Structures are given as structure tokens and as C-alpha cells.
Amino acid sequence: MQRAVSLVAPLGFLRPALPAALSRSLSCAQDKLRRTPLYDFHLAHGGRMVAFAGWSLPVQYRDSHVDSHLHTRRHCSLFDVSHMLQTKIFGCDRVKLMESLVVGDIAELKPNQGTLSLFTNEAGGILDDLIVTNTAEGYLYVVSNAGCWDKDLVLMQDKVRELQNGGSDVGLEVVDNALLALQGPTAAQVLQAGVAHDLRKLPFMTSAVMEVFGVSGCRVTRCGYTGEDGMEISVPVAGAVHMAMALLQNPEVKLAGLAARDSLRLEAGLCLYGNDIDEHTTPVEGSLSWTLGDQPVTALQFVQAGEGYLASLNLYFLNVLLFFFHYKLRTFSMAFSG
Image (cartoon, rainbow, N blue to C red):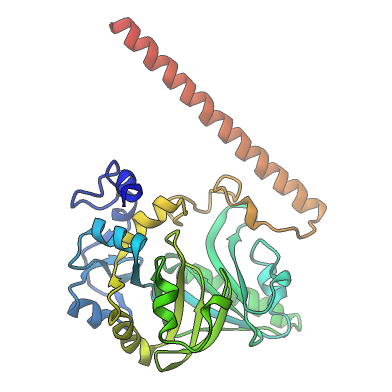
């Protein structure tokens, strides 16, 4: 608890105001917003609904923001992340398609293994961050950000058409499932009560299809966005409320909203697209170089990467110089005024 409070208190999370980075993305306007399958469930449980990336989502419930944050760190919390874009990429050339759009070695993923990756533009800027899983069922399962839903979908659909016109065997399907994130140190213990699969054999960034609390066809992935152990469950819409209710029967579980999710990821040092990284940020600048993998590059790609890296270094050294200039100027001003 002390670890969390020591961070959130200086940032103002002990006050009713929301974090600045989050509040820029939120509003209370509810007109023409998309709703997740759990919308009525949120209202019934005291969810304070706000607009986020075109969706109506709970920013918090009856518990305070700090209480939700600390509960996640000590027990586990249930987050509705159904607003995120879920897609299947299928066909013999599915890896070819994905590796033409993202960084990293998708071909090297083992069955049911996933990885964080990045859509990038020609200048090396980050278009979005996403998780790609090479499923044992013969397709790639992709989860990307709601705020980039339209551009991500267009990007993938355009590439599908391009490859299909060239004779490639590839296709895309949007997955119309809810997505629940159970996050916290007791998440696996809680979920184990509802599955036959031994979750000890589901390590970080791996995935499996299983029945969860009587709902069949769920994909469970051991991952999350809080810095804690956790599971993301892609569940058919018809079973979403039932599953949420089943999870809440365990006293370890409480509902949490966008505010806690934001402070948890800040404490864990995780980037939020649109706030910490965007299309003008390279993987190097975003401390995401580790996502690049070991794929061989062409001479042109090498030159372009070098230019981007040098630009990142130039920006870094410029920031360092500006910091020292500001520091020296401030020191001089204090000495002069004293």
C-alpha cells in the first residue's frame, strides 16, 4: 500500500480530480457513444460513466479511485476493456500480412504465444501498440486500442486487399466479443475456480481457449496493463454479464474503472497511446526498442532506421541541453536574487 500511495499522492490522485493524462481523453457527454455489452451492468453497480475514445465507460464505481488502485495491487480487480478492437487474421499468409505492418518476429511465436508489437509508419513513428497472439487454432488474434479502432482496421483491411490481389491467402475478421481484464496478484487463483485448465501452465503472454464459469469459447490470455499478474478474457457477448457476476461472487474481486487503470499503468511505467506515444514517436523514443525483434532488414530500411535513431539521439541530447540550461539559469537567478 505504501508503494502505491507514495506515487499517487504527489500526482494528485488523493483528490477528486482525475489524472491530467486521462482527463484529456474523457468527457461526460453521452450522446452517440458506443456501449459495451456490460453497460447496464456498470450502471447497476454504481459505475460513473464517461466518454472515452467514443465509448461510454466507467471511470470509477462506489469505491474511491485510490481504494480501487490499492485493491488491485493487493487483491484483484475486474476491468471492462470491451472497447478494444479484437481481430482475427487467418489464411496461409497471415504472418506475411502482419509482419508487413508491425515490428517484431511474428513468425517466431510459438502456438498460443503472444507479444506486444507496434504498427509503424514509413518514418518509424508509432501508429498504435497492439498484442499479437499466434493461436493454436491457426489464426492470429490481435488486440489494439479503441482510440485507433478506425485507422487500425483500415490499415489491416487495405493490406489484406493488397495481398489478396497479389494472390495471397489471407483474410480478416472483427471479433464481436466482450473483453474482461482480471488484474491483481490473486487473479489466477480467482479464475482457477471457474476453469478446468491448469492456469499454472499458462505463463505470461500465452493464451488458450477454454470454458470459463460455464461460458464456452472464451480465450484467456495471461497479460494485462497494470503491472500485476492478470488475465484478459475474450468472452462471447451472451455470456459477458454472467461471467462478470460469477467473478464478483469472490470477495477478492472488485470492479475498477478507467481512473484506476490509468494510475496503475503509470505506476508500472506503461505507455498510453495518444498521451505518451504517438505517430511522431519512434520505438526508441518510447523506450520500446525491445519490440523490434531480430528480423533481417534491407539496406533502405537500415538507412531509414539509422535516420530515425539519429533523430531520436538529437532530440534526447537537445532535451538534456535544455534541462541543464534551465537548471543553470534558475541557479543564477536564485543567486542573483539572494
